[in-house]
Image (tube, rainbow, N blue to C red; front, side, top):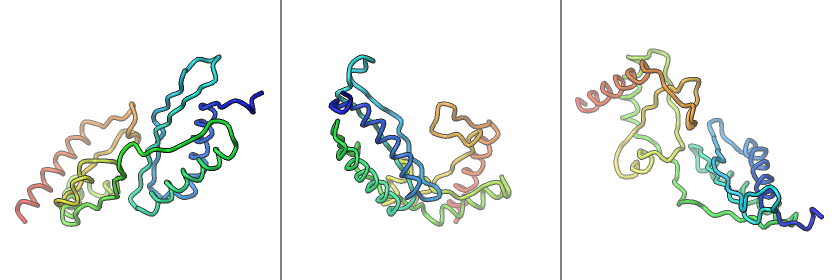
Length: 183
C-alpha cells in the first residue's frame, strides 16, 4: 500500500537526510549548509502530504565547492525521483551570489587593529553568507569584521555576544577606519 503513495513529506525527508550524508563528502573545511524551513501540506497526520517544500542554503568561499553542492543536490533529486513516489524539483530562491573576496588593504588594517586589541586571539575567516559586503565587493573595496559569538553559536536564536567583545569589536573597527583614513 505504501508503495503507491506519492508522499511529498517522505521525499522531503529523504532529500534532507541524503544532503546531510552527502554534503560532507564534497564540503570544504569551512562549508556550512542549513535547511531552515520546511512546509508540508496539508499538514494533517491522517492525510498523505501532496506538497512539501524545503529551503536549503549552502555557503563556502570557493565556487568549486558551491558547484559540487549544486551537483550533489541535482544527483540526489534524480535518485529520489528514480524511486518513484512524489516528484522532486529544485528551484533557486534567488540568483546565486559568487564568493566575494574582501579588499586585502582593508583586511590588513583590520588585522593590525585586531592584534592591538586582542593579541593572538583573532583569526581571518571567510564568510559565504549574503552580507552587504559580498554584494558591493565588485564595486568598491570592502572588508568585514566579526566579533565572537558565545559558544561559537551563530545564525541561531541562541546567538549572543559578550558586551566586552562588542566593545572590543568597535575599538578594532574604529582603529582600522582611522588607519585607513590616514593611509
